[in-house]
Length: 311
Image (tube, rainbow, N blue to C red; front, side, top):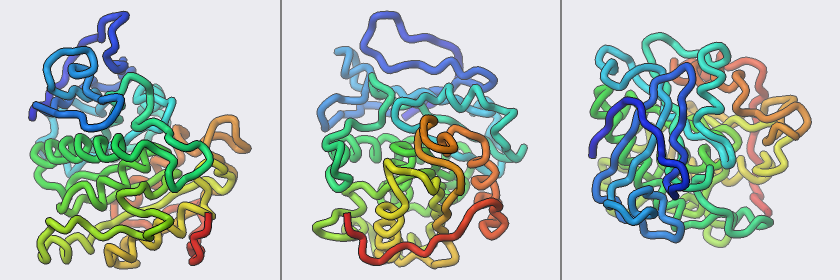
């Protein structure tokens, strides 16, 4: 695997994924060598266009990746469906608060549409997304996390975060995508996908290939859930209960997770109060948890998840 930063542009009329322009930020690209898509609608631009089997994933970074030495860490943030990394880059730096000793990278989906996975059933969250594509996402995002860990000095220096579909993938990567304990995860308007939870089976076990030592270490995972009170797409009433069962299955310390409701916001920009992300407020909450100060997150309400988890 390799990664680099620099200019470039996808050729017009090709089936390659959208390459971000990264206004106000530095363009970077991650390469997962010999990536073999295993679902329909393969994400790899090379494979999709009939080229080599390497997967290319673009991102917009707060600094060149070559400047990572000396930084305390990095946040890898995944946009939502029908959004782009550029939607966040356009807000940077005015509305994206960032400590100087951390970087943030807004990752662009490598699929030919601005989604991380296709919708399988619009009305049923239990079977909402193409599960094979979810597992593909977990595979290549986890590989990118490994690359960033090598750059920044350890997995504990890498956070994953995201909005909507990006939050869905981030939560899955942080919990099940790697046996390593990451810095943490910040889940904005997310929902546990089938590799984490199914209505018919409940919370899924961690991978059986993980050692007992890895399972014990994984209990140190930090994860924070942040959803708008008016979210009708992945509503608190359905998402928080299921996520609570997942964190219980992984035996996480209650000190290391929070469930927050953000008043006045929905899921999309058309919702009452507007979209919870991209917005700007989410980044103040994000950097408080990265700094180890979740109790200092302001203008949110802590939620005790329901226990019945009914659809």
